[in-house]
Length: 111
Image 1 (tube, one colour):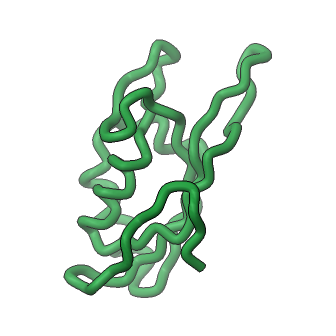
Image 2: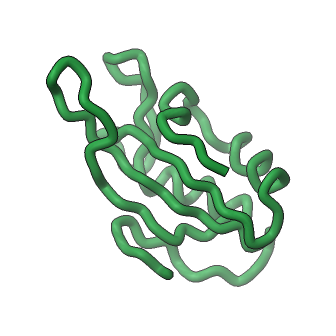
């Protein structure tokens, strides 16, 4: 499942990941982007009117639903009025709930 430039319109992600898990099934992938948040452990409404999500928050919420972060890459996700907007690109794999999972490492590929 792909959701580029979508999560910026969502605040809390705790309800999203279980729905995606159900849609992709075991071994399925979820690829998406997020906009940077100054607080890496949370999310906040930014002056732009969009939400920024910290990588620790995203990966924690995803892991609660059985996702393993395969890749988290900090990058420029778009340009707006000549400014670079930074964020992260993610590749998550759903391994099923309550499974042993490797740790999540921002900026490092596990595959």
